[in-house]
Image: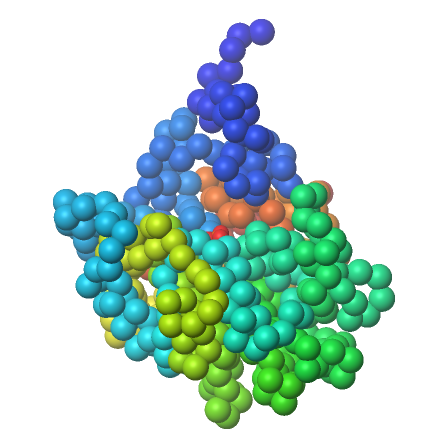
Length: 436
Ligand SMILES: *Cc1c(COP(=O)(O)O)cnc(C)c1O
């Protein structure tokens, strides 16, 4: 046998010898869809080129951060300048203040915030803060929501309704998740039952308001209203995990959409990441001043980070937020995304494929199901092998979507009408193949 001339395969073989699964984050390994991961050589705008020099239209965008596309000139310039001034100081800088001001300006429920380096760190810290501020231990999480890989959050529902969870990862002791109640998303009855049984012991309820880690499932307005009411009544903190949706579905995040429909609505704490770093390791958690003041050095809840508020990352995030807060940015992004999902929906209908699709701002999701699912069990009714065929059909045509059916997609301001049209026509060909 002659050795493979596929550079992606060569790199994957080398990587697998040295890095578990060949990747530094599991989904990148293509396990759900099979085949060889694409090793990215470079990216520009809406495209990346893999190790074979093949161009792909990128609908992952680093799983959300690249809302301006890759290599936006204003962001590149800001990062280059920042690098010349130093990589990291472990001392405060003006840009941290500016980034805090910029975030708070757009997300009014956030009165104070702290910067960290990953969404995992932000969610984990928000939970410690919620527990420290309330003096309680229990937390509510919903099945199918992802909040990073902190131990207490790697948990699935036990048997029966509204029960304490079981670890979803080896290495997480059962005792660590015994304080985590796992509930079904969008299930008001279970939510009420959980609060009726445990209400005054629940420190926080953490939720992805649009669950991008179930592809794309919205929390219904009545469900969210009930979450807010029950949290308020029981002194439980409502924590919005907007790592994915923040500055992505709207400038004010998903919470601005609920606030438009539920008078006076606001979460108590918000977790942010992805877009606020513009592709650099940067995340944040923030919210009510009286809660945030429990954090060290003001209060007794400890939290720290050597690279927190990193000067290069804050430059990248600030430049990104400055671009996306320009007038009509979100309007244009949302209509481009809408064109994509409408086109995909029409293509599926024309080929007689069961298909449902939704989007908000620059985030979208689709299912090979006749109706949009409302919870994790419904998402899991998707036909995985069929999704794998769709994924590879698109990949063969240079269209790169998430290699797993429970992941959202992202459109950037660099995607053109021609990119969308190319994607839709490729999708129609693949749908035709799926029918046979
Ligand atoms: C990506 C994500 C996280 C984890 O962020 P990392 O930076 O990968 O640690 C947490 N919550 C949500 C909703 C996410 O989408």
